[in-house]
Structures are given as structure tokens and as C-alpha cells.
Image (tube, rainbow, N blue to C red; front, side):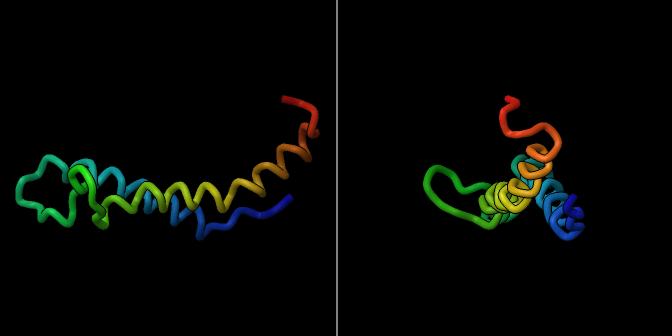
Length: 77
């Protein structure tokens, strides 16, 4: 069994905290526009947080899949 990589867990936790903070800041009027989601077409720093989280999921997909196949076998749905 492969050992968990703590750095990935920390990275994923940071991404979640940043997503919560970004959604809170959406309604705050004194926050600069570059710290909010881009309206319509555009990209700000905040718009990159969710893709960072999805990237972290991708890093752990293969080890998770291998553990499940080892535990249940390939034929089980």
C-alpha cells in the first residue's frame, strides 16, 4: 500500500480554504476586482483556485484507483 503524501493533503486543504475565502469576498465591496471572479470573459487569480484543486485530485487518482483494484479486484463495479 502506498503511503499518503502529506504535501498533497496540505495543498488540497489550502485550495479549499482559498475557495471559501474567494466566495466570501464576492459580496464585499471594498475588495479590488482582481481578488474577485472575473465577470463574463476574463481571468483573475481567484479563477485559478478551483483548477488547482482539480489538479490535486488528479495527483491522487492513480494511487486511489490502485488501492481499490487491490482491495476489490477489477471486475467489481
